[in-house]
Length: 285
Image 1 (tube, rainbow, N blue to C red):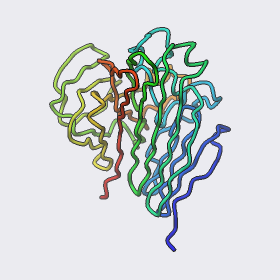
Image 2: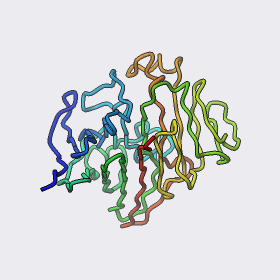
Image 3: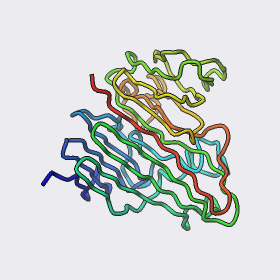
Image 4: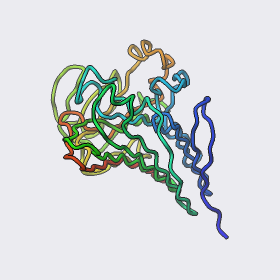
């Protein structure tokens, strides 16, 4: 009988979590707090960046991994300043379902529905699901939104993925060439360069490309057309030193490449559903 993938209850820095493992060696850890993917090891390497100074108190948002931003991106959302930055989904406990396990795949879904705490911020009924699909050399995360209310639901958001890099000043990102780019630091618009490099603070929003992106020639990044934007962010040294949950040199080892909805909110009618995914694939040398 061939070996099967496994799923086990665990704890990560004191937070309740689930660990998925494949017989081939790939492994993923997701915290119930925020349905936050904390670690993805593939090919013997950690592929996500998690700040060693992140607060793991079950209250604050976690710095690194893959935060789920809902129902707004940054302060762009249904109630803007009334909601926490990037929404509340990343700050609340989710419920994990039963895993689906095979020889070459592990799948797990986590769920969050409106409750007294969310309604204190936002009087909207909803149900979220984060579906994790782990296979050898690949990770796909799918966020599903269900409007369980009798009125329309409008939201923005993101899968705010922090990717690990040896040195961001030597990193290259390809695949966005020619896409409309907004530089939020200078408030300027231009077509994206064919090869994007990172020599200073970087915070830009792109119209999502139809083809996959490639980071350092070794990681392929795709997203579903249901996400209109791709966000690329690195704080660089000066901003990183002001972030209390990042080490001073943390910026050098991470690059956020996010599947996002930034400018125009998605609106679901009563009973409506939406899904958006991001897929990370290790490219063999």
